[in-house]
Image (cartoon, rainbow, N blue to C red; front, top):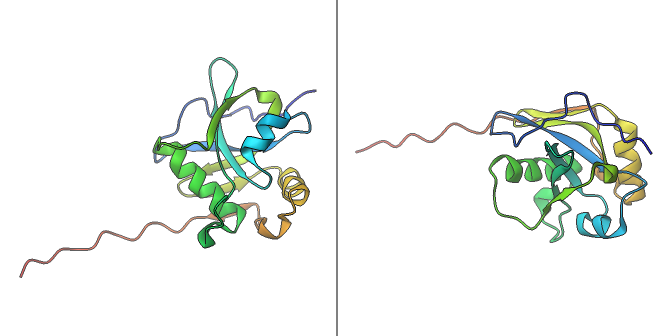
Length: 150
């Protein structure tokens, strides 16, 4: 089976201004890997030089209200990845388990293969969390508050 990866698959951990790849599981994903990732998860990551993938995922296991939509989950997973935060929601995987569907950065999401993402979310019974368009722009963070000494 041939797994489609972008020719410009990011090959190192992005910093806060970099970008990572968005993935969905393939039909050939191993059962234990799928059990760890969980159905409906947003999966972000990058390629390693040994031809494996480092992925971070968010499935909203604890039903947080701010992680209902797929793009919210993707942003949370990307923030963990970019800031190298400690988490159990990461793994190194063979590329046969995942295929690339787009990109994510701190500015937004670009989905190149929407049909694959929609298939993953439909199979996960989470199609209602799917993004409405192929491009999602993130609002910039608010500026820091000024401290006025009196």
